[in-house]
Length: 523
Image 1 (tube, rainbow, N blue to C red):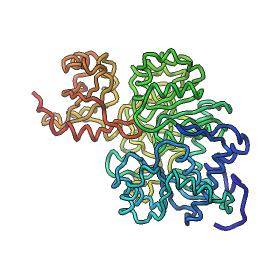
Image 2 (image 1 turned 45 degrees about the vertical axis):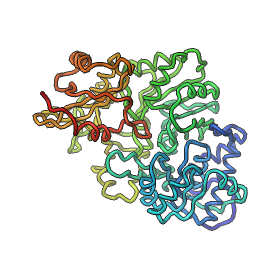
Image 3 (image 1 turned 180 degrees about the vertical axis):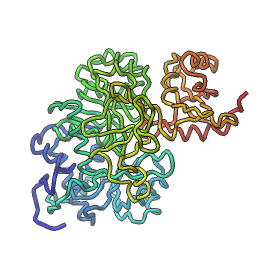
Image 4 (image 1 turned 120 degrees about the vertical axis):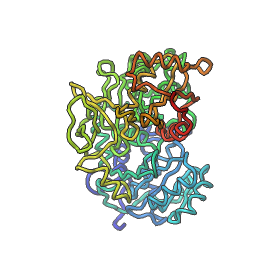
């Protein structure tokens, strides 16, 4: 990296990088609040200067263009600054799930080839353990005292480094519910086009935009969702990590005047269950969105009733697509309830069979994508990349159907679909039906071995009231009224909570491991 020094935030290279977005807003509205977290409020000027100083510190420690910088921390402004500092000098940020154990962290560090780790002080021991299996990590900087010292010593004057917007910005590791996680490589262009296309689809908001996501920052929803606010000079509210507190979340929505908010269905369910929700002044909240996991139509109706002043928006997609591919706008939230909507601007979709032939409208098939927001590859996994892009389209693994108006409905994941006696059973359809039972808070359906039918459905149920759970007979009676015989669960198991990954998705692999081996044989 050579050349003469340039001012903080100078735009270099072709197109716009993620770092350039911050720099532009810092020039345009330097004293506007950029980020709010549990312990700090920082303006665009402050964040931009800190990012340049941290970028200089990484350069001094040998980080070069294309090197990977892993970031392991609970939700905080410092985590975002660490990403942007890596991007400012042309490195690639690797967000790491802080809930993982040392062996899992070691896999991400070794697979990505990270040379530097920035982490919360609370994670120094687990990082030290992980480094034994990831010897390429030469430097660890803690996002506490180390960071404070680094920012004091480092210069914010950076050498010019032309960075193409086609260069990799992030390696986002998928949840790895089956096999090892894969690192989806997202470019600067992937992410800023996603932000622009989202704003074009949903409507551009002004500088008063205040955005919050209850997702962890290592999740794509937390990362990508903040970009429209960053571009328009809005404010990003970062709630703390840890157990979700619905009452505290509502207080934050009110106190910070949040205008747009994303949460997973389980979090919205907790919010809507608050007995005093209507007493809070949420008049500034103009859009609430959900995604990352299925929501029952029962919950959606509850959300619509609880937030009459806000647009309820369904956001559907996946990490590899930056992430949103389809939206269901508020005006259709009742008319097309249960749908994931239509493709957003910049996304082309097909619904295909196993031979990549388009299926007739109304028929179930896999949704595949073409879009400038789709990742470039899985990091160091050419075979998996080729499989994902077979036929020239990105294969989502989601089974959907399209109605006569072009609206899409998810029926299952390809890997979760149950085949019983030759009949396809789509878990989402059965889960949605059972979730309407007044005694059921949540339900997940899995397939379990059956000597006659190959496999049959088992429902794992969370009771709305633990002291008054639905009986198996009540569930069977309810299912008879709403589902064909072959779709009805042959077995029911009760749990206090469904296992979820950090993105809020139910981990059905865990349920299958727990319940499939001990299912009673059918009568």
